[in-house]
Length: 478
Ligand code: ATP
Ligand code: MG
Image (cartoon, rainbow, N blue to C red; front, side):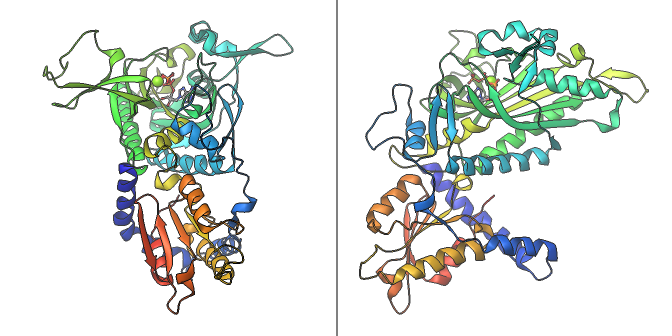
């Protein structure tokens, strides 16, 4: 709850400087004619109507989702964001897809910022490269394996070090001038987890952003490593999430340097030690058992907490590039094996983890950027004294969702006017639209006022139409 507030106030302060320019430039008559045609067409689309959204409620209030459940899973089932399919697999319903797409756009921004180029590798992966790296055996039961009609072994990709390194090796002769090369994708990964649980937090099919870096030498690779870690930090900051970067174990991915990014949370499955004195932070897996003092400053200020692992970075050295002979041509015109890093972000896990840490037991709170819709407009109940305000509400929803470039496609109209405003307000609170605009009796007065519930800050404001438009024009969207 606290973090949601931070997100809101950050939005109010930083956005002030940014939007006026953005809005001007997008609406300016100087904008390229082709572009403005596109946006005008899109801007005429009417707002989505709640009565038409496919948002089936998969859990009645008070009903339990079973023993593998947690707050985010319950809220996502109740809110019609997810529908269970098989253990650890879910249908992402339209609201969840909107949110994942926003998260992916934020991730894309950060990955491009560090020079990443997006590609998309097959999920169906031949066994042969995995046998070459030795991981066909190492992955054990966690790997989904299958065989084609010719009897050739495949797996559903749990991660793609082999695939990308082989891809790079097939290009041979990349010049040192073309490095660093950073390739990434956002795709579904498959892991036959022993205990899929907590909804999207531990699925058997989930979205991961995985980036792979190729550098000329160790120094350059470590520089790349740093810059990607910084990009991860910026991403979590933009989401308004409290996060910690800890020293980590390299597991079966391998390599010599590794960090995890965690969101502190009681349901987290990792145990972390953070030093209150020097800031040292580690997954306990990396510390010698029974150790009570900080390995860096030797103070006794280590505090244990639990965390949800949302990202993991590895410096790999030449572990994979030497196996697949992924080389570049160095300044002396000789082939040399590339230095690699790999960088994972649990995209679907981040979504659930954010809901987990920001929400209350009965109401979703989103990182401001990730709400499926930013604004919900509530017309009065059908047949009530203020019934004539229905068309005002419709017109308002339409004009906000088409007139404000930041809110294009971000406004819904809760047209279930057979229900009272109170009941719909309760629903809106449960679903967590950051802004709920009620077109109630005060909108019929001579100087119409709209009631605006800012759910992330908990404030309720009464605003004139101009003030409402002004406030909403500052909402940052992606
Ligand atoms: P964990 O220890 O939680 O099983 P991992 O260390 O095996 O995860 P990595 O191989 O580091 O996972 O994968 C990169 C990222 O993908 C993780 O940091 C996590 O955010 C995400 N991830 C891994 N497994 C799952 C899963 N089963 N469901 C959802 N996200 C996952
Ligand atoms: Mg990991």
